[in-house]
Every structure is written in structure tokens, then in C-alpha cells.
Image 1 (cartoon, helix red, strand yellow):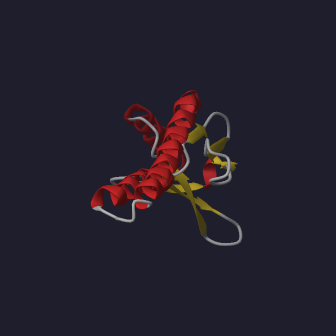
Image 2: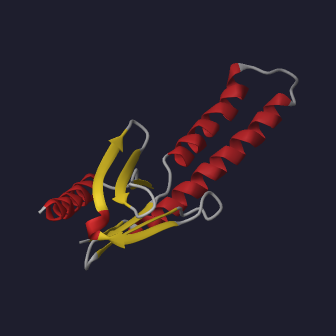
Length: 154
């Protein structure tokens, strides 16, 4: 099964540019309002609210997630539409190495933790950001990983 949300990349780029513009605009308006030599709650909110939205956008993690379970290997890719925020993460390993997976669903973000077996240590945990997957995509990912785990246990 293949799963990706690459078709939403334009939307995520627009959203990142919008967050950046609101942040820069808030900073500029804060310093313009501060030049009046009085700082009130309104001028502080011009700085805090855009910073809050930028922080949420950054904490949610990488926007693009790709998963491929066709063939004998599992492929995971995670990348950000904003090239300077973090590097793309790509992992490929045989299906039989998959030991377990866990999806952590918090208020602001969702993460996928995949546990695989390795030669050097008993297991390795890989982390992927899946915050921007839709509910259906998340259900498909769970069912695919469940199938791989059930085949491994046989």
C-alpha cells in the first residue's frame, strides 16, 4: 500500500508563507507601536499571537509523509515544505524487521514510532511526524502496519 500527502504540498507552502508574513507583520507593527514610547497590551499581543502561531506550525513537524509497503520492504519518508526547518528523513528496511509501532496523538501533533530489530542492538525506534495526515490516511496507515505485524508473527 502506498500512502502520501504530497498533493497537499502547495497548501502547506501557502500556509507557511502566511505564517511567516503574519509573524513579520506582527514584529513590524510591534516596533511601530513601541515607537510611541508606551507599551500596552495591544502592542504586546501584536508580537505574542504571531509567535504563538509560528511556534505551533513548527512544533507540528514535517508536513509531507510518504509510506510504501509494496514489495518486501517498508519505506518511510518525512520532509518539510520549508527547506531550512529540518532535513528530509528517509528510511527503508525489510518488513520482517518490523517489531512494533505506536501512534502518539497529542493535542498539537501526532507522531509515529516504529520499532525495528537491528544487528548491533536489540531494537531501534524510528520517529516520524504524521500531524498533517487526514483521518482516513491515518486509518489506512494503521491497517497496513497491522497487516505487516500479523504476517511477521506467523
